[in-house]
Image 1 (cartoon, rainbow, N blue to C red):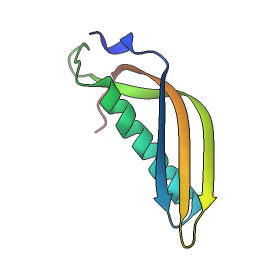
Image 2 (image 1 turned 30 degrees about the horizontal axis):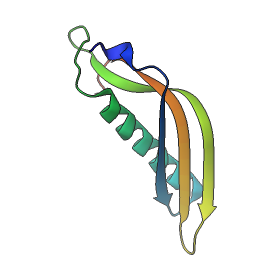
Image 3 (image 1 turned 90 degrees about the horizontal axis):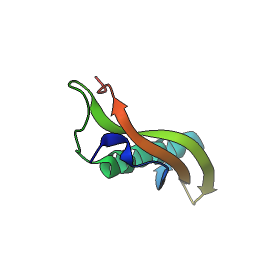
Image 4 (image 1 turned 30 degrees about the vertical axis):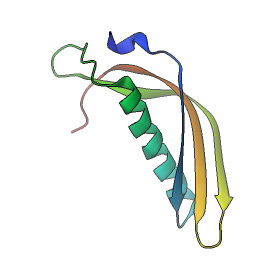
Length: 87
């Protein structure tokens, strides 16, 4: 399977934090983790690059206040593409 064969994947994830920003940051980190997992290790990329998830659209960001923390939900669309590995 080629790396770019998964187009327009919908990936949604949540995150928790003591501030709204921290909750959203955690949610985005979880989106990237889930997206990269969906891109798998189908290493159909040129040498030195890896198949990773790239967000193409942010559909929705919501933050809910709980008793003593915030809960964020991030909904995105994205695709897999060959990217330089993060150092």
